[in-house]
Image (cartoon, rainbow over all chains, first blue to last red; front, side, top):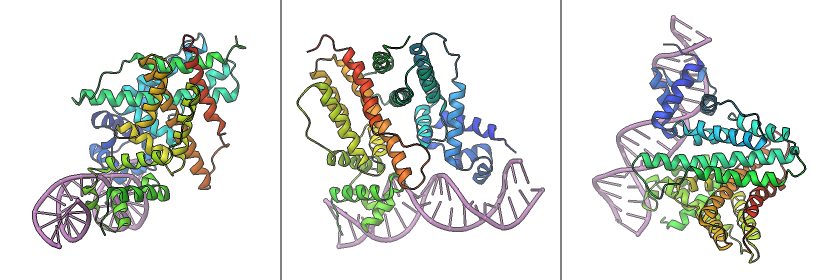
Length: 186
Length: 186
DNA sequence: ACCTGAACACCGTTCAAGT
DNA sequence: ACCTGAACACCGTTCAAGT
């Protein structure tokens, strides 16, 4: 059997969701495709590149149309979409955050946040720093949340359930900080 | 040669700083100590537990006395100390953030932030969420910053240098968000 | 209490060679 | 263009046995 890059990405995402990031090895993915491990290196330079493609696919599948009202609503929509996209697949948050840290993928949400803030009239430096701050928040919160959700569904409940509204509250803290610095904007 | 737990932690931190987290294997640490890999399992149940001990040691070494003025200064001091402690060792931010996500160590900074905010009069829920938000920010920002610093010092400079003051600016965003919710406090 | 020796079940990656 | 087969240099962890 012969595959294209997209077939491998699709199987990779399915494998991620079924067994988790820790069990997503080049050898296992190759085995699942009925192919030698070395065959994967015809399509991807290395595992990091493959993971970047998986992360981008997870984000692509979670894409939603965005509102056209104010910057706060747009920022909330981008962050909410990012969170939902990552929560939709097992270990999705860890995968996307790791790939973003690599610098090899998962760039879209950060770029959208930054341009949204620039277009809202914030200075370039503030827009860049605020976009990174929001991104770190969403990655960190969602990874925590997903670890908790997955531990719970595995039957290893280890504490009181955190409310989903926590996400909105933490986000509101940063948004209020931004709003305080927008007195001169429309 | 026979070792105690503390000897292994000390060598582990030295190995981390010399070769990075990716090259910190149980086998390599054992080799460095002149001992069989299996010997380490007499002192630590598994690699995660060992990494948790290393993270706590890195944080312990970075501990500083804290100011007694307002909650903003205390929060800034805790976050700054955390950042400095992680930056002091190669891959320190990645190690501490990973261990914190495990839930096996690196709990002190989060607990200090939360109790600082509770004592400042913020409600329990807000204090908990704000502490986590601040922690995610410091972990994310510092991991990014350290990746950049380490790439630069390896000669692989790949973009314009980010300023250290970025850290203070992102932190100020969250602190302003908190301040906005403290009108009824002293 | 602390360690050895050997094994089990894996990894990512490279590379000549095949079709 | 895409894959095989074989190899290289590793992993974390377990466990009976030694001192």
